[in-house]
Length: 443
Image (cartoon, rainbow, N blue to C red; front, side, top):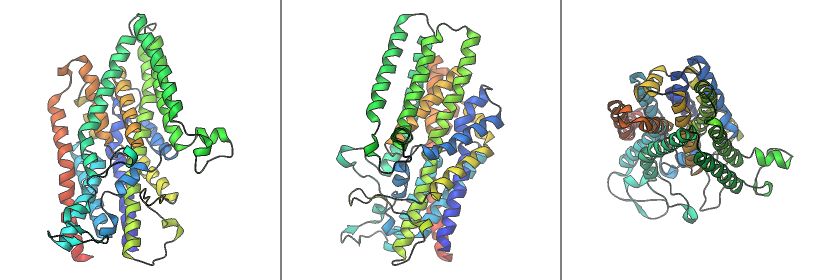
């Protein structure tokens, strides 16, 4: 039990570090454009990091918890993975590199699990609990097909989104920037497009909403408030609100003078940074929840017959067996609190990289980048994919830079960031494997 408590404490410390390491993701553009002071910006971001507790479910947490097969590892594996993730996060923060906290956690977990499999079984095959022959590399859940044609999961999918998340962010921000630029012109075409987009958004969001009868645990007695504040529905209502707000601005953009447009864009930056901070909190806090859930599952498996107190009564979902997951309320509350407090601590070296070194950012570009980043995070969270908020916002900032000209993006800085992204998972995995072998000497 002592080891389990140690892992939970270290996981929350990682969550705190994640907060100040990734604070720049949400506040870099509002600080660079002087919409908010650095202190105001971190308070703003931290508030919405915590508010994500009421918005998002546990889909990403489930994906992270199943990075390695929990029935074949022990608590030392998870401990080594968390320590490796903390070390890499602190190193990259010190160097001012906006690396992915998500991928260092996944890499650490997977690396320690592989080290454990090799230490216990060697490189030859062994008979698993299912009676079939397994090999050391199969301890990691590399790929699992989606149920009923849904989105597949596994480490390979997470690795794929090292490339796809920034590309999606860049494409979305580029398209939003082009949309805004055309909306500033006094022609009817952009307005017709905007109205059509508003109607399509209303139709799409209404079809994504679940009814009161479909909600398993309504939060209120009132049908209306239960539907409105269901975690699934809130997310889609936010998507609709963001798109409709930007659309509303586009309809009046051409009638504003330069001063009025700049003032409106700065106000919209508050909305876009809040939306991105919600996505950051919802995406990254769930990863720590997944690690804690995996640790409890491993503890129960390695201590058969043990009685777990209600405050640690965690059950991992299993769609194949029809088992629904459950998690005590204090775990998500603690995770969202830790990341919010971490964000309050700031990460000014990375703010400088994100806010000025990649490309010069104005309020116009800040709105486009943060809106694109937020929408990307909401959709990937819906698909239960733990993407990197760092990669997403970096891609979004590059996307708005490309609307000016290719040379507006400082590609030397960008290439250095990409190398850090590529190296994060393998270095975290090697660190975790090293820590695992060291820890096994003492534990």
